[in-house]
Length: 282
Ligand code: PAF
Image 1: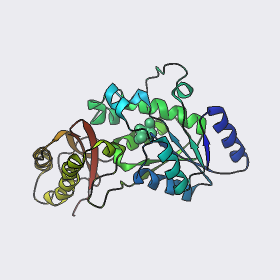
Image 2: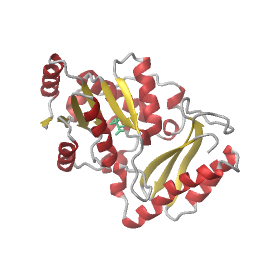
Image 3: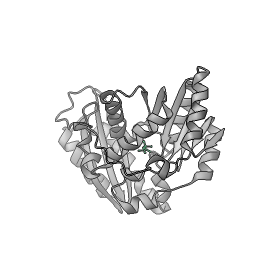
Image 4: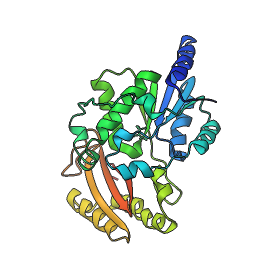
């Protein structure tokens, strides 16, 4: 596995590989890697001749300075995990390389970016679009891999590459959970043992809501989930929305093929997200 920091070195290596006819798969990350990221890397390795992973904590997508500063950074451990997962190239970009000057671009991301995270983290998706368009223009991948835990991000990235004609295939990969159901997240590293126990209530409630949909309306399930999670000590729901999986607009009933429930919960200071897909006739 080759490790890079400079853009010029990484592009020279990728140009060489492309000239040999190799396909390039890319896993963009912010580091602090866990099995969820590694599942993307393994899929990328299986589907491409070359798998490149970057780890860059992108400042422009954080609307909270403290959240940015406290975001875990585990460069050495990340490099070891990536080697084990079979990545070929790893890139740890520097901030001045990615943003030699402030990025003032404003992206048209449409209604997908106006709900949920878009509403509670203004500017977040614009920052994601800023960094991804830069990374894509440098790496020029054939395919790029994203986790479904960030369900809204995945939908927006698909829309962004379509809208801006970026020639890359976006591949979504399922959420990876701990054996007890907790969705893997780099932010879990910031939870105390006690908080982690409380956080389990999030996935447990989402799973239980699959049964509730048989007997309750969408609005009732929504209120039930919020009440259940809020009743757990130390947890506070920021939002829970039951939406169409493609448009991300709220649905009013279960007569829809693809429905997703997306939740964001504060566990102390740590902001956790999770989601569940509701299928008709379950
Ligand atoms: O999902 C993430 O880790 C980030 O939002 C991404 C896609 C790497 C952009 O910084």
